[in-house]
Length: 167
Image 1 (cartoon, rainbow, N blue to C red):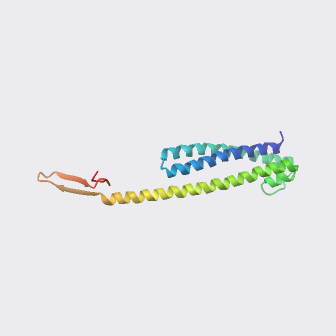
Image 2 (image 1 turned 30 degrees about the vertical axis):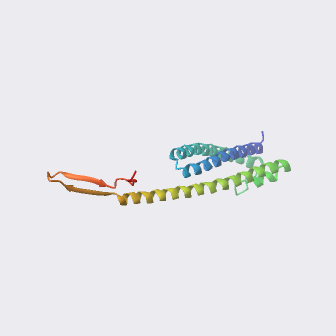
Image 3 (image 1 turned 60 degrees about the horizontal axis):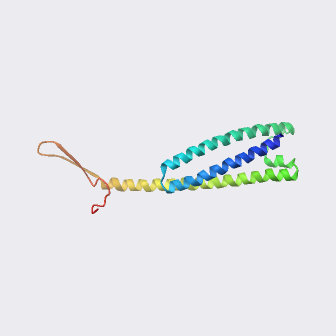
């Protein structure tokens, strides 16, 4: 199997893993909306495992890019090798396949980034709402202390919770 075939295979596997990340990011948004912290935690752990696998693939791809650089005698190239550099040396069909993988990967990464930003905003909004609710509850709590005739401290919390008192 030649170096370019390995790079193409890695891109294909990365695309599949990033599709899983995207799916998990969508589910995380649903978990945030439904306030399901345990589901959110589970999805985050799954996503972390997939991202670790992607890092491994990135390392593998880097190794094959270095091999490609040596094969094509591109040692004088001062920058990283891009997909465009690789596709220029290929036949049209293979170049189009690899180019399309790159386009699909890039668009998926933008989608994941947008989902992650949306989820971050959702989480912040929920935190703000809960903070406001807690402040409201704390504002309604008061501690009344004093001593009775036997010099024993009385302690009572008024309005311990926001409860419908007619229920």
